[in-house]
Image 1 (cartoon, rainbow, N blue to C red):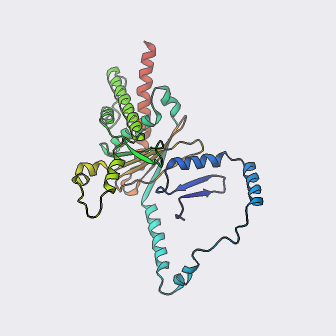
Image 2 (image 1 turned 90 degrees about the vertical axis):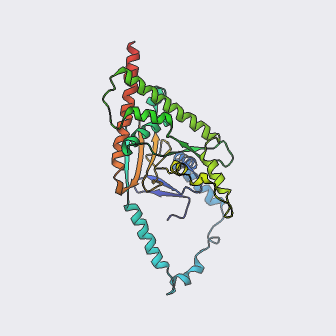
Image 3 (image 1 turned 135 degrees about the horizontal axis):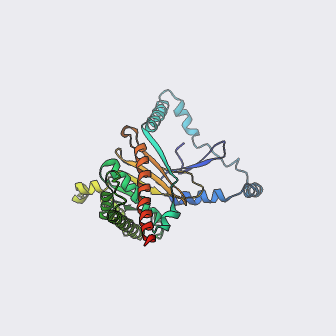
Length: 324
């Protein structure tokens, strides 16, 4: 049933999961809920359950069937409910079958290594995503990373735009495929410098976005001020503006020690969804796209390739410096 903001799924093997409907809340409340639930012991729950049963009034007389007045209409011969239910089920089944999902469980390294070589784990992984996307599409594409705005009352999210002059310079230096020139010290140093610039540029954007200095929520607010009687400003129909808000790459980062994986669907038909977690010794990616494109398995491979190349850049440079 998809009529709740949060649903908890429990399986017979002891695994549990959450389904979140996004309009009411973002990722952090889900993380907080999962954190609370997984920290409760069976003994804690049993004690709370016993005390609640003793103090709470019975709900038997307070539960009401809110659909009771609908029954006559649904059961009448004129009702279209049965056919609408069949259509809804078929639409849902088709939506699922039209999609592909791949998981890249990269075990080469995680946040411990990334911090050791001097990067922000999230920004570093975003650059790996950019390199993989560059090689998948042959170019960069509008990339959305959800950023938190928790310092503000009722603050939700702002967009961190990963595509930038710095990230473009980095992916172009790496090329559409591995160039086998990593042992060339001058070229390696140039690529490493561009990687550091791209990561730092992303970190600065995230900081600004978290302080309300992004651009997308301001544009959204401006568009919501328009009434039916207003003339829409030319900005909102400008081709560059429209292209800049076509999120072919929708990404979001949530890491929790009890989350094995998480994800979401793409937001445009010719795009991909990339939910990821950067754990201490691994990076987990949940990749979605429409099946017709055949992108998810390829992108999974390219993400692994990008992370390994970036590791080699850092390790060879650090080895060279240690020799000096």
